Amino acid sequence: MSTARIYQRPKNAMQSGRARTDRWVLEFDPAEQQQADPLTGWAGSGDTRAQLRLNFPTLEAAQDYAARENIAYHVVPAPQRKLKLQAYADNFR
Image 1 (cartoon, rainbow, N blue to C red):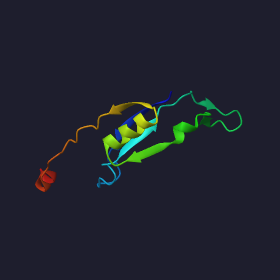
Image 2 (cartoon, rainbow, N blue to C red):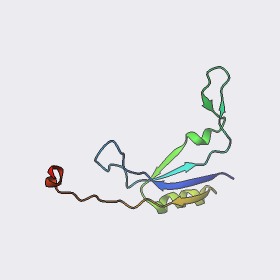
Image 3 (tube, helix red, strand yellow):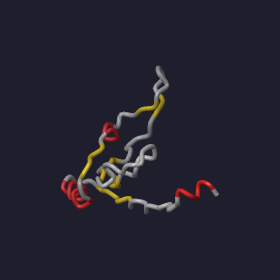
Image 4 (cartoon, rainbow, N blue to C red):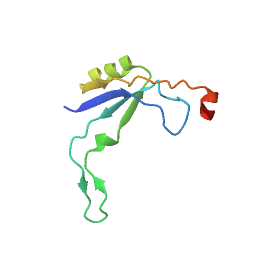
């Protein structure tokens, strides 16, 4: 039986917008360790589920899918947003 984690995508650090942060993602845990390829030196494995990432509109939809497909899962709670309230005049102190 495979295991997966369900989490909410965090805000992109390179942009100010919060697009697609309301979506929930189901991502499978790695089933085997990655190994260096002897020819190229790139890391890889034969685990094709590591390439799979499923998006859901709600947490309940992701949990229903995992239950229906007999996938053991754990939910990673989204970190709390910390607002840094600052006035424009504070730049000149």
